[in-house]
Amino acid sequence: MEFDIAYLLRYLPSLLRGLALTVQASGIAILLSILVGLVGACIRVARVPVLSQLIVAYVEFIRNTPLLVQLFFVFFGLPALGLTLSLFWSGVLSLTLWAGAFQVENVRGGLAAIAPGLKEAARALGLNQAQYLRLVGLPLAVRVGLPSMLNTCVSVIKNSAYLSAIGVQELTGVAFDRIASDFRAFEMLAVLLAGYLSVVLSLSAAVRLLEHRLQAPFRR
Amino acid sequence: MNLILENLPLFLIGLRATLLLAVVTLIASTAIGVVLGSLATLKSRPLRILVALYVETFRDIPLIVTIFAIFFGAPYLGVPLEPFPSVALGLSLWGGANGAEIVRAGINSVPHGQPEAARALGLHTGQIYLLILWPQALRAVLPAYTGLLALLFQSTSLGALVGVTEFLKAGGLVIERSTVMLGINPAFQIYAFVLVVYFVISSSLSLLSRRLERRLARGGERNIVAARDAASV
Image 1 (cartoon, one colour):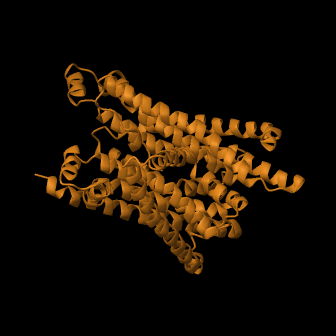
Image 2 (cartoon, chains in turn orange, blue):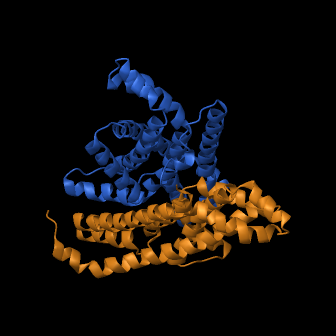
Image 3 (tube, chains in turn brown, orange):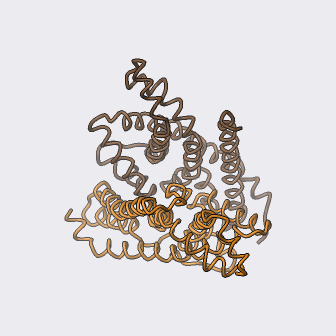
């Protein structure tokens, strides 16, 4: 069986629609998960009683359970609680919850890397905890934690492929539907290989470039 | 709760397949990881590039795509694979890529003076790896390696998608069975139970990984490969 370009071109529009859905789902999940990460890390660092422990439990639970099972739980299980989401939003919610846990750790790592003297100085100047986090802590923490935060974002794009498991027609879903119905494999596998590698490699290159730029003030 | 007890045999069959898959892929990943990770520390530039190419490819393609590609693509190459070997192969290729990174970092954590001194004493490359680099790298990579095992264990759940009756699939079957036979939909309870079981096993591994990291650090080990750098999920 040889590689058939014409076949590939015929399904290009639907593959592009799949790619658009991949980008859409990952984009929304990335933005929301960063929000979860910022808020969660602040709660952890400010040691807000009860909430802080809940964040710890949330992070541990997400990191120690498979994303696929989380996705099935959200899509098949949550309707029992009266929360019925569409395919797309079930996927976005799962990806957000999953990535949010990693982002909490990334931001917290950044906050932990700040020299204690800065926090004491902020206190001495009369800033309260919230002001310290907003004006001093988070800007520095995001700068330190940015590479790992962006790596988590790259993982979100890769893991958006899991959404095909509940039937979301994103890139992977579209490609394997064609493989299943047309009895041809190589064209679609080549598209997936090229699609994911190009997105992930270009983002990783951007991460390295950014890392380099952020290090600039500290290089001699 | 009753539903879980009634279907315990099915859950146990699933759990056995999950654990078997995790052990098989850990062994295969270790083999790939040690060979490729060691090759990546040799002086040869083409070898390093080849290893980097392998590692990047399998870390950057979503694991689910790798497994689907093997399961659905193998028949077109004339070698149809059963679900279990397909998943085992996909997980091993991915685990091997992450294992190679860990082994490489572990070997590089040994101070450069040591292999150079060994070379000066007349040891050849094989002896240097066997007697000097591997034993010390082994300690350095233990935390990261336990972390990788936790990820491999979690990733076996992908087997459910190509028809391996592992733990997640067992849960799915119990739900289907109850829906058909009892007319109820226990998806919430069953998937919650499945989540908890994965959590208990995986978090024990993560805890072990953190303990090892702390103990090695206390023992004066300075060059530990951090568990969080272990793998790209």
